[in-house]
Length: 151
Image (tube, rainbow, N blue to C red; front, side, top):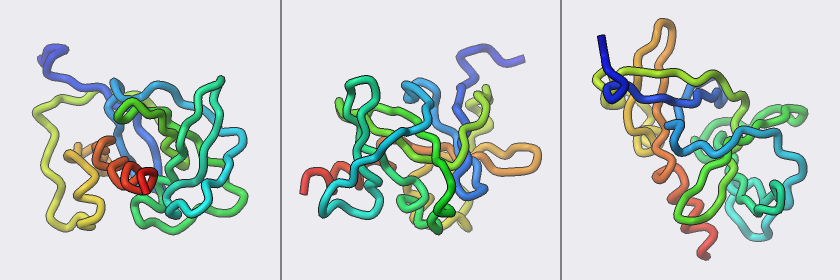
């Protein structure tokens, strides 16, 4: 039997039918974004900015960040609120899932067959019954947004 120190909790999300896990300690909130305001001259990964209860957040289109095809025009993304370097971000995903507790010892390195652009954004994978849960490294996933916002 594993102890609580040997387990880690993740908020699961789906992005284009791929399951990702975000460490629960990084997640501030899960919400449906209302209105996004485009940022002129920003990269396509920056979906815009939004105001959530008086807090301005930069919205990152995770499909674009991961090099995936755009969602259907009528799709309504959900947002995972995270902080990165004292800034607030909303990671736009297709669907949030459940919170799962997984053994730290079961975290594996990303497989060699994983797309190299994805491999640089995940800290590892958990094999589940019928899928791989890719564990998102939030800091690396937002590093490009840092560069884009500084430009």
